[in-house]
Length: 135
Image (cartoon, rainbow, N blue to C red; front, side):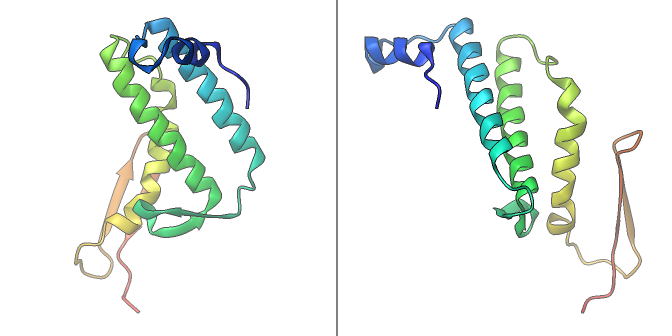
């Protein structure tokens, strides 16, 4: 793990004296992003992971996708708070592509066999859920 000067400043002055500035926040986000990227580069993508909202046991790549969406959503909240809400819109197609994997697990209403739900995020991001006969 690489040391972060912003964290060192906070701990040197004590936990009750810490005040977040835009520079500190962005430095921490940049540093933590580098740490997360290094971790993601080190894992085997086809290993197992547990993603409850996608049905439980899934491939590791979907677990990493979950991490990505959580980071993106929390950063969206921060961006909204600092007046830069659209700064990371370029990642929205990736976020939606990960979220859509939860649809088959989450979308379980009673429906007749053959009922089809189309999910269209535009361009090449189209999904089709089809109710099949229960086993």
